[in-house]
Length: 311
Length: 268
Image (cartoon, rainbow over all chains, first blue to last red; front, side):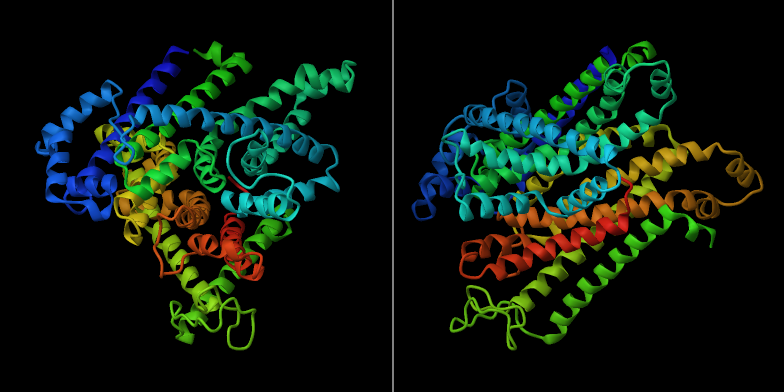
């Protein structure tokens, strides 16, 4: 347990350093004079003058050499001082913390819904192997061949534009959450329902399961006592692997649905070349990824007591 | 021969064959577009949003550009990206993996630190950061994707090599005085081959998806070069007037990914 958390903390530091160093290099190696660039994104292309650039150079301390600015940047980072947005001038931490809530809401809702879709699909394809399994397999293959933004696009075309049941994009009402969540959930469930099916099949065939049936437990009771946990273990571990898809899905889905989360913020910041915001949002996504993985580690630890005994 | 009677094997071979055929169709489509010698960026504003016909095989877009030429250009771009990403990522990953698994020591430790940093970052975020570095550059996208993908080859080939390096057959071959290259070709590669090919097929599909995703958030390849993700964004406003146009890049993207997934097989 201690080892597990220790490893994750190391990984967290690695992410912070990796993203930070990458954005630092990025900041330095973009073509053109940095002060002029910032001035043009702040005041507009037409209002850039030598004085404005000089003013920004003074304000942001751009005269330092590469190494000394790397260290001052590193110290800022250690204090979670991410700087201000080059475009709006707001502190990055404010922007990101505002976006984070929306992203977490989308991620949690999407994951929960994907579990609700994947379990019935997986269990049903074990139960009715003859006719249901091929349907589920074809569904999975088809959805996996589509990039997540195409799934979202199809949903928009169907539910928002053709039938007009739901809003296209935005975030005012709870209804705005439905389509992004559904998109993320379908993309995730396409793979995880197969894992549920294969895991269930393995458990049902296992000797311990057969034995508990033989000693006279009813099928339902056997499933509750001996099935659920054992089926759950590989599934939860797999959901951990899927977090890559969640984070990547969030970036695409938020951009598509104009959902004001971190991924949308990242795409916008890249478009506007707003480097402090790029750094803040990328850091946030990386940290979120490691945190989610830690949660899954702890869940596996809780479901399977054997891991405890090993240590 | 015996393997052909194994039902499961037959199925996977059949779907693999189908994937290869699909890929061949896509490649030949991209080649026909090349051979036709039509400029995919040439506009003809008196023939916009045309349905498929004799002159415009797949119709024309909102600037009157030939959709077939544009699609085949996008296909060439996606497929060539997939190929060079897979080739460089798998070569670098496998070579480093085998060396790290075989020699171990400081090289293994050092590489593992790098791998852990890369693994802690979601791939798309990494690629997006690189795309921000040099917007619209094919090379930047390629380098970023290759950097994300070599890790997987490295991990698998390293762990397989580690378990094989102390096996009796390799110890024996070493004692008999066979060179490392010979041992790699005759003892290691036969084991590595199948997982590496599976990873390569998934990797190719992912590379295509990454580039389309970048195009979709408008930080990928810039117009007028046609790219599938960017075409989808451009054509979306016209879905009401010309739904067949939006459908084309969507279908192409799905078909490329499907072809690579079928080639990869069911293993994940």
